[in-house]
Image (tube, rainbow, N blue to C red; front, side, top):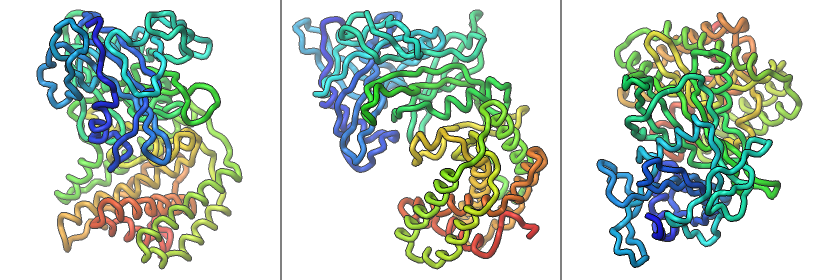
Length: 511
């Protein structure tokens, strides 16, 4: 493929990106410029593998996206759904058309990414092009850049490196055992902000190995991704409550957020995949539908949650809360209260209760802060046979800025999130069964979860009722805004919870 030129990225990517679930600027066409990229090597030298870093200036805040593409001389069988563009080379070689694919759907890219990770290799970014023109198959980045003392890439000395660059990507291997050789891969559907790839492997003897799931982060932020950091810390501590971490790729790229040096963060993360399991949301919803008791499962889920919190406290430490922490929570509650009233004016009826809850937060005794899950609900927990509950997706609440999601927080925030999730199971079932109530089911599940948590944590969350109810209220206010904008028929789920909270500390049924 040498001597050919890829078409301008701006010619075909905006329309394609606008249709992707991971594109954050819903309802608008991205305005793209290319700020850099890197090339991964295909051992067979048949596929061009280029990872593009694209800056979208169409919104109020510029957003950096990671968009890997593969270019082939023949169609990739079974991948028409992932075809981004077809173009004719502009040289005079008489070559046929080129086919550009969304790389996570191409096994050549998946194999190269996994190899970079497991071999702990380094590759350099090529210089960005503000015009948005993409590199041709012969204009990709160089490789074999030196590793800098901070773990980033040093000046590159490979072809196409632009005379040296401070930007690059490094693979990091976390698991000791070799996971095996890739034989097949497929992309999970339905994700909102990332792209997850299931990787099927075989060992040196050709026998099936345990599969992996590799998460490719589409929206890039300066800072360490909590999904990688927290799960890796739990896995290193020997916890079986999270999938085993295998490795990750981190990178350094031009910083569009602040002028203080390059941005750095995670590009991809691989971990153990648990096939054939259901998440706790589906398990709980099936229990509601069949009238089956869920108390034992909720109790064991509470114990698993407390176990993960205890492991995180040991592995990543704790700190005492400050006045700034108290201010941040009260500010969040005020902002979410204002947003909820703006979307649903009837919420103003709870002004007095919400102000009282904020005041209680300010005067309450706060426990130590630590790293937590951050966006905890039933869909973030898997029911693994023979292993019990396994927690996944530690990225934190998607709408919160990354610096906030990486800070120590109240473990009670996760507890409150799960309490809200039990309400949502009951409420979603009621949506499909008008005139029937699942509220008693939700109440029993909540109580069992809290009992299970208290039995392992050594402290009952209901002893911190002011904080627990405030965090549940804060989450419910967030839900009011979301449902009003996206699912108005579900609005009754959070508003009913707020009405109950206004009558007293519902999280403690003993009161």
